[in-house]
Structures are given as C-alpha cells and as structure tokens.
Amino acid sequence: MLESTKFIISKLSRDRTSLVGAFLLIALVLIAIFAPVLAPYPEDVTEFHPPERLFGPSMLHFFGTDRMGSDIFSRMLFGARITIAIAVIAVGVSVLVGVPIGLIAGYNRNWISDGLMRISDIFLAVPQIILAIAIAQTLGPSIENVILALSATYWPFWARLVYAETRSALTETYVEASIALGASPFRVMVFHVLPNISSSIIVRTTIGMGGTILTAAALGFLGLGPPAPSPEWGRTIAESREFLPEAWWYATAPGVAIFLVVMGFNLFGDGLRDILDPRTRRSNDG
Amino acid sequence: MLWFVPTLIGLMIITFTISHIIPADPVAFFAGENATAEQIEALRARYGFDKPLHIQLVNYLIGVTQGDLGISIYTQRPISEDLLARLPATMELTFMAVFFSTIVGVPLGVFAAVYRNSFLDHFLRVLTVSGLAIASFWLAILFQLLFAMELQITPLQGRIDGWGPEKITGFFVLDSLLVADWESLQSAFSHLILPTLTLAFPAMATIVRFTRAGVLDAINSNYVLYEQAMGLPSNLIIWKYVLRNALIGTVTQIGLIFGILIAGAVVVEAVFDWPGLGLYAVEAIMNSDYSAIMGFTLVTGAFFIIVNLIVDILHGIIDPRTQD
Image 1 (cartoon, rainbow over the protein chains, first blue to last red):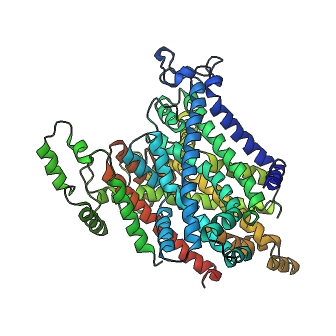
Image 2: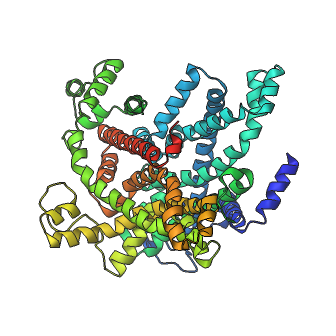
C-alpha cells in the first residue's frame, strides 16, 4: 500500500496539470484552516459597516466591500470553510451510503439486489440539481439541509459504479478462489473486492467533489443555501446582482473562487484517473 | 425500455415523499397568520390534505397520470397549465444550446485530435476544462456585464421586445418565421444569444472532449490504415469515416448533455429572466410553492427519462453492435 502510494505520488508530481490541481486544493485547505489568521477583518463575517458599503478594491479591501460594508476578501476566506464542509460531508455521506449498497447489490443476485439498483436508477433518471432543489426547498435554507439534499441525491452515482465494478470483479479468479476457500460474503466483499475497485471509487470521488461544489453554489445562488449573512460564495454572487455593473468586483471574487476550486478537483481527478484507471485514460499520446 | 413506466412511478413516489416531509404545515402557511382553525381545516379538505397518507399518494398518482399536478398556491392556476405555457421558452433555449454546442463542439473536437499536442489542442483543453469548472450563473452574469452593460450589443434579459410574434408553436424564432415578422425574429435572436452561449459552454466542453477521444481512438484503427494505404485523401478519411465512428461515443453523451442543460437552465433562466420552466421553479422557490416545485421536478424528470430512452434507441440504430 505504501509502495503504491509512493508510485502514485511520483507519477502525479510529473504531470503538470495534476500538480496545478493539487496546488489549488492545498491552497483551498490552507485558506479554510487559517481563515481567521489570514483574513484582515475576520469579524466582517457577521459585522456590518454601512458607511463603507460598496467600496472598490484597494489596499485596505483587496476585493472591495459588499452591500453591508463588509470586507469581501475576508468573507471569501471564510466562505472556503463552508464550501469544504458541504463538499466533504455531502460526498462523504454519499460514498458511505452508495459503496455498501453497490457492494451488496453487486455481490448478490436476488430481488434485494434488483430493488436497490432500480431505486438508484430512479434517482439517476433525474438531473441531480432538480431533486436537490426540491429537497432543499422543502427542508428550508441551511447548510445542514444543503448537505442532506446533496447526499440524498448523490449516493446512487457510487452505488451504480460499485455495482458494475463488483459484478466484473466477481468473474475474476482471485474472487472465485477466495469463495472456494470458504471466505464469508462479508470477507469477500470487504477484503477482496473493495480493495480492487477502490481506485475507481477514488477517481469518481475526486471528480464528484467539483460537481458537488458547483451544485452547492447553485443552490446558494437560488437562495436555498445557508441564509444571510453567510459568506457562502453562491449567495454572495446572488447578492451582487442588484449592484452591477457599478460594483463589478462584488461578483468577481466569489466567481473566481468557485472556478479555481472546481478546476482544482477536476484537474487532480483527471490526473488520478490517468494513473489509477487506465481503461478510461484521456487519449493524450494517440 | 421496460423500465420507463416503473421509473416514472418511482419518481412520483419520490416527489410525493419529499412534499410530505415538510416540517412546516403548508396549509397553515398559505392560510396566513390570521386564519382560524376552521378556515385551515376547510383549506386542508379542499387540497385533500385531510385524508390518510396512502390515500393521498394514490390520489396523487391518479391525478398525475391524468395530467393533474395540483393547483399552484401562488398563481392559483393548475400547475400543469403553468408548466405547459412555460415549456416552449425552455425548449427553444435548450434546442439552440444543443445546436450551437454540437455545431461548434464536434469540429473543434476533430481539430484537437488531428492536431493533437499542438497549440490549438492545448488551448482547447484549457477551454474545455474551464467549461466544466465555471458556475453557469456566474458566466451568465459575466456575459451580461460585458455584452449587455459595457458594450451594449445584446439585450440584458428577457425573451423578446414587445409582444412577440403571433402565437402558433410558442417558439418565437419559428413563429416569427412562419408569420414573416422580421422585427420579432431579430429581437428573438438577439435575446437568445447570451443565454444560449452560457448554456452551451459546458455542453460544448463535454462534446469537444468526447469527440476528441473518439477521433483519436478511430484514427489508430486498421480500417484507417487501410484507407490511407489505398491513397484516400486524409480529409475524406477524417471527416467521413473517422468522424462517423467517433460520433457514436458522442451520441451516447447526449443524455448527459441534456442533464447539464436542464440543470443549467434553472439558474441561467433566473439570471436572464427567461420565462421558461427554470424561472418558474425559481419563482416557486421564492414563494414556497411546494406543489409547483414537485410538478416541475416531475416534468423535467420525465423529459430527461424520455431523452435517455431516445438516446438508447438511437444508439442501437447507429451502432448495431450494442444489440445483443
């Protein structure tokens, strides 16, 4: 395991696009952790200074100030925490729910297995954001409900993937051998099948993070995310609209932030896929 | 194919479940703070909320199959009529976006593959990666800032100036052509430009990626080597034989692309004030109009399921190998 981790890191470090992705992600995590230290005005997440509203970018306020006179730069740094929390928890829950369901449905061949896959197919039959909007709207705007809405609509992606991978792993000799040796279904699934399909899960999870951040930002933009005065990026862009085009800086900072973070996950995910999942390699060399 | 009906019923059960886990009582909310207990009960009976849950579910399913999605608490009109009135606007925008992203995306994908690792290929890679990373509502705002506010060469929002052409199909471009209303045609087109570009950008990125990968796969196959040996001109080989095989992969992605477009339509319509299904959903969100949101979810879901069904059938026709 250690050897393969080393191999992956050495391969990734030679791929320029993966390095850019990794750099963006590390920057995001550092910004989220050290937001209170890095932010020039950490109190501006909740405090208002109406006399200073809608100031343009300056040395005092790098990204200008918003409609309440709060420092946009400081608020964006704290917004990174919300973005990470939503993406990590929502995708984490989806993986924790979807992977076991996929394993069980893939390993067994009975009505439970069919039923589980039919249920995930129904969820997959609708664009994720549509169902997420319905759920988030019903539950009311808050971070917890955004996470719930995203998890409830995202687990079927992993269930489907793991189901397909498990089915193909079951035809491999090493699985047949362990079943023949009398390994319990649990043992076969967790110790034989799961390690061999983990690379596809990791790739899907990395790329899924980018998509989840975009969906979460869209929910925030529609007013379904955490309520004001939350510094959530999507919400900030929605707030800025009535002050355009004069306050052009207002929407710029959160827009660029979303773009860079999603870019980071996509680039890193593409790099991981090239190494871990050669079957779907993007054809670079041709 | 067989699963089409069960999937739809499953979707109905999901929307029904979501609309019945509401923590706050929608009837009490709608009736207002000053409503008496009797008034609330009367409303509850009127909307069928007083019956047991399984009866409500059966009534809901029966209603939906007859095209009855309930009454919008906000507009006080049948939701199915509201959605039907909004459908042409979204369809017009979606079709334009599909058309544009295909017309631009497929040739770019071929060029990227033929001139792989050239400057053009690298540039297109940056462009496609960006297309999949940019938030469409932000891109929409950037376009508005640049083209509508700064340069003032396109309208800021809306679907048309004035009343629009005489209504025949509800598609403004088509209708103005049919009645030869050139002023409306020009207005309809100019209003379509920005929303179409915004919506088409991520879809185009997907098409470029898949076409490029498909062409690269096909270029290395034996039949291409054979055609080259036969002395066929390379342009003919690429644009006729290679492209046909490469597009099989792209066609299977049409379902995915429609998913991107429907999801994008909600926020893009909100930014451009485009009077389609997406804007209807956003208005319903603002007004806590639960039944309207469920109706929207069901209709877009059904539309998406049908598109995927058509793609499956098309795929079978284009690529006979998938039929077993």
